[in-house]
Image (cartoon, rainbow, N blue to C red; front, side):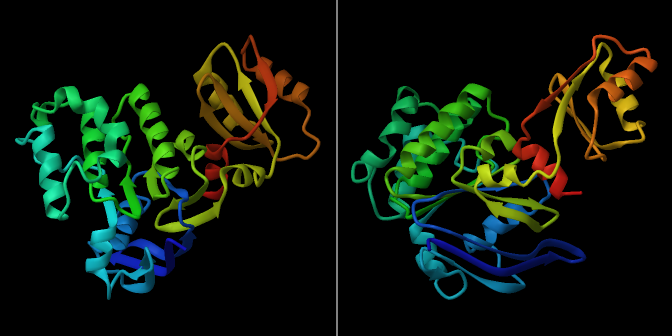
Amino acid sequence: MSITVSHITKSYGAVNALKDISFSVDEGELFGIIGPDGAGKTTLFRVLTTLLIADKGKATVANFDVLNDYKSIRNNVGYMPGKFSLYQDLTVEENLEFFATIFGTTIEENYELIEDVYTQIKPFKKRRAGKLSGGMKQKLALCCALIHKPKVLFLDEPTTGVDPVSRKEFWEMLKRLQQKGITILVSTPYMDEAALCDRIALIQDGKLLEVDSPQNIVKHFPKELYNVSASKMYELIESLKNYEHQYSVYPFGEFVHYTDKRSDFNPKELQNYLETKNLSNIIIEITNPTIEDTFMELAK
């Protein structure tokens, strides 16, 4: 195992940030920690990268104990925090050289590892980091986290606030890094990114809801799910919430995701009810659940 987490608990005063967290990550795996803001993702990353000490429990990273071998862990992991934390008054090139020097290496020695990412920012190597766009800052931070050839890469919400094109490019880069044998632990609030991981852990309020592959987690959704749309979205949502047989109602893009309490649910009955609410252009069709649907169900 590349990472093992056993009964980790961490509190900030009366706030329980992590509640008895246990999971493991295989070598070379792309593992996602999926949950909303405040779920405990950053606290977990700080414990695993030896920046925080857990109140209870044990953890190892790259076969090193987070308490007894913290120096070894720091030499063998790359960490990209959620907030851009490089030196904004240094250029792209100067930041990269600085971090290479800290780890006793050079850009040239490990250039093969960062080449795929660095070629995209190389035209801006003389530009100060603070003047880069969000996507370029992201790529520079990833280069700095990789420059010492880590065994494990921690990425804390790396695509938050980044445009959709840069998000897509970033995940493509992660897949290529994974092929080089690097274990990657990434956290994200974006449920669509969960499907790009080998396995995921769903976390809410400091507690793990489920750990499995994205495909298996979706299979656990307990009911038939329907896309419902109508001429007036707000009135549709309110009408569905007031329907006596509704089990769950969540806006989902141009549709509302609806599940019914009854096992013998008849969509025609729902349509007749919605028509009494002066709604038109009603569409009710069965659909496949997503990770977001499963998360909402587990978080109830």
